[in-house]
Amino acid sequence: MEWKILNQILKRLRNLRVISNTSPLIYLSKIGRLELLHQIFDTVYVPNIVMTEILRGKELSYGFASAIEVEDAVANGWIKVIELESDENDVAEKYSRDPGIHPGEAVVLAIGHNFDLLLLDDLGARTFAKALGFDIIGTIGVILQAYDSELISFAEFEECLDDLEYYDFWIHPHLKRRITAEAESIKLRQEHTD
Image (tube, rainbow, N blue to C red):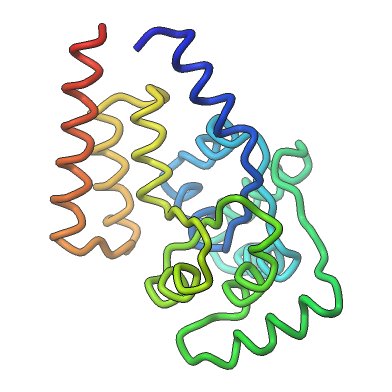
């Protein structure tokens, strides 16, 4: 892909206002790819409750490194922590009553109208977000976008999927086939434009 076209695509993505739940940040960090969010979107917002969930990982050996990496991204200014307005807290409280919605997801859903894109992995939260009319992407979608934007190679894309599974990120076999087919389609397109 020509660099000029790539820059146009990335510029368009960087102009999106993006808010994330805990899962995409943690899993991308675990596989050493948190920086992809910064490269793709420039700035990512997280509600304070999500940041609290992430920082709890500092108390756990398996979450310590990810918590530190996200904390560093906040210090560097590309992850921004936001507070909720009181009416948004009320909406989040209402959404959190749904048994499939966790507190961080409820908050992301409650303030989703302020953003162009929501980063969510949990199927229940994604279904809820779609019903509310939000545009969503998850960890796998971020990795696919990184590959499509030529930030990672096809081999790195495959490695990311394997690494996610290693860290117990469940990928339904049908979804894995579908996303791999999409990546192969991107690969063919890239080979034809080079």
